[in-house]
Length: 469
Image (cartoon, rainbow, N blue to C red):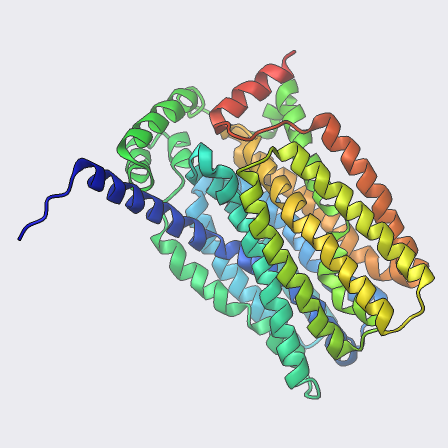
């Protein structure tokens, strides 16, 4: 007996096919975010063991941690321009190889000097992925799903950090008496690097990038794989209308001399700084040591730190859902109020409670709450705004510059935190981040645009009009 599909059944299956193709492409691309998370988070648990094997001081501890961030700044800066020239997909394939080389280099490093060099190489890949993956996702996604798709990258970043914290805890508690166990913690990052290199072969190129190259037939072919026929044609018409006058020239630094583009660049850079001056990466990089100083032993701190990773993942999932329900501005401001408040409470608790397990649990509960606000609101919104605000011709360059600034702010936090802790103590160090959080709130209220529910082309027109007034 034969079965005839109704037009409705065919449309339903077609929609599922397009959504499935789009979903697969986005999840494969976000392996770059997973590697970003693992490679930045793994140092958290590796440092206590490296201190003994490599004889680290607060200065060399900060140097090893922040060397990746220094490399990431320049990786992001170069990646924006390379992505505009060679394509988002091709660059991700190259970055997978750099991820692998950096992971293996750090795992076998015999000295502090070699470790720093290997971490810089790894940072080039981390920074490149941090710029290219959200840009790639924003260009693949339809306007209605862009917020949720781009923030999948944030979800994978915190999932990578959770994987790092869990790996550290397992290795540290099971083989903690063995020599050089930190090498195995670092080597695990080679596995997702190989997976990214294989998976990206099955992902299409960005349709926006193809349009910018004047390759309209290939652009339409990609859209037909990830959109319905009607949506593909409508988006093709919109993108071609906007891109047609821009394909004759590539964006350059000179473009930012235009007042409206300079304002957009300041917004992108400002969002990058806002994300970092909350102090989030002080907890991501040094959380195990913060908990140990608060009253936990090293092995207990490794295990307790998993709670930070679990809450970060849960908060990122909630953040993805919230982006489809509420505006970017109120979500970000709420998150900043939450992080500033919890950091103030950590400072007060560290001043008033005696060192011991009780203080350790208070600090742990507050870091968990801090990360809920950060990963559920601040990080997803800031990454999304950076990916949204730049017009097509300078999107790669603008994102590269913005993420460069983000990584340099990250570097400043990662390098200075051990010395601030040694010199000022935990309370005064966190009070500094509280003051910076207040400054971030004022910046967002004054400069950040609301982007929810608008296509990239609509955003460009609105920002241009606002900047020319």
